Image (cartoon, rainbow over the protein chains, first blue to last red):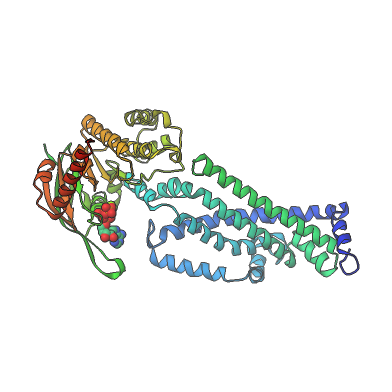
Length: 236
Length: 261
Ligand SMILES: Nc1ncnc2c1ncn2[C@@H]1O[C@H](COP(=O)(O)OP(=O)(O)OP(=O)(O)O)[C@@H](O)[C@H]1O
Ligand SMILES: [Mg+2]
């Protein structure tokens, strides 16, 4: 049903019809798959890079001025690429790895490439938030740098890291929708194919509902978990 | 009595905004084994910098620091970590780890110093008992009062059985009554274990209450040192004089109000 020949109300009513939602089950699965795999990759690599950035900072545990500056440039360069350009850029890379240039897995690479630098920066700013005194105390106790990172730095900033990760997952989700345009499947694919190319606005609306619900859900879970941790620590 | 800490001609210059700032300007200091030695000075005198040079949280430019016969400034990184297990440090802001329970905060130094795992629990409980925290072991620092937090700080500093404690303004964030309790605790620990304590503070009362000897730090120099009593009665430095005068003034105020300590 299209807004071109039907009223807004009719399109809204049609957007809740079972047949539309039946067709959406597969794409929802694809979107969830892309989002979770990309988020996982983003989490792991973003954390590692964020930690390295933080400790190589001139005021960090292991100051490495050159490496800090260079990695800063690389991250900024990657972050300055719009998501769509990143997807286009990553198509040949995906072809090298998977042997075909599009599809769900190919887009995961593009999404990760775009979101890892972002999450790395978020991790860095979360880790820099730690009170300097705690690091001092850990040093005075005679902790190795490894202990400081894994037993003090990460646990102390966990609530902030979780909030940052929530933001990243939502960015990943929105990027999966964009990746739909490039053959990645998922909700974005449905929105483009039916909503844009065939003017089936009822299907487009259904996609919008799903995205809204997913974002609310992700944000809600993120808030809940980080708040719960703060509560356990009696910090709220 | 033998000398436990011996600092000789210690220098440290910072370069904030490129301009040199002499913070420690030839410090000479001797602290006897088993005593509680006070260092007093105004804000910015270099007290914290001096404290931080002792366990090398801060690098020194020149001079020497001998602690229990160890030349601190000559230690390798690895040796330094080991040495730090033998130096406890207490902070004004407590610097407890919020992600850990009180138990975990106290156990942490044992874990990183390679204390036998099977004995950690016993040692933590023993230490918690000494500082009066047995009831709070499962709590997180966020749920504690300032005084209780500092007790955790002290427990964390002494749990590895160090020979030396650096206390940098340990009571400055506490109310007078809690300050007394914490000072009593430090006194008790000192009496029990013979641990040497370097008490850095700008609170005269604190020094008078638990120190036998003290030094006055003024613009990066030790301007006088000796028995607390002598310095209070017959100060020989600007800072010492000022502190002594303020102290006498306060005493008079207390007398006229009829409420001495
Ligand atoms: N890392 C640093 N870089 C530059 N300047 C510093 C640094 N640390 C301390 N200073 C300066 O050195 C001087 C002495 O500082 P320090 O913290 O040792 O004083 P303090 O006697 O402990 O004072 P307070 O009683 O306020 O704690 C101050 O002027 C301070 O601004
Ligand atoms: Mg200070």
